[in-house]
Amino acid sequence: LGAVCLLFAGFAFSAARTIRVTQDVVLPGGQTLKAGTYNVVVNEKLDQVQFLQDSKVVVTHACKCIPQEKKNRETELQMEQGPGNTQVLQEIKLAGETRIITLPS
Image (cartoon, rainbow, N blue to C red; front, side, top):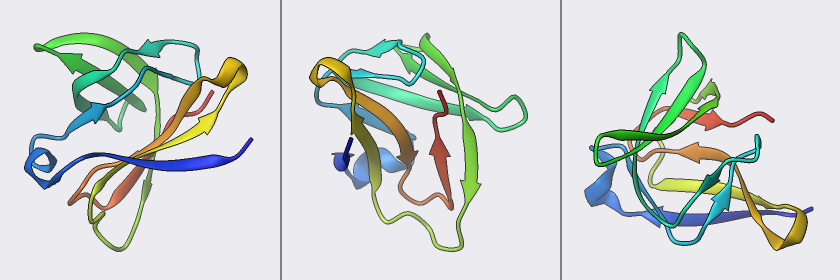
């Protein structure tokens, strides 16, 4: 299974911690994020990330945040090809932040 890096959000969205998913993706736990725009809320104390649309939680998933020295230059979602040609979201880098949000299975 090869990893593919896909860029989905521009600099205009970085301050709002918003991502735009251009195709349906699956989280490691099997939940699906339909194509669309999501606000991303990370709670490092609870090790969880929430994906919201219109201020409503669509999906909550476990996460681990890995600190980095440098700020992420752009918002990036890293996928891995899953069964049935699905794209499984593995990690999120939000522009301007100094962490990688990983999504364990």
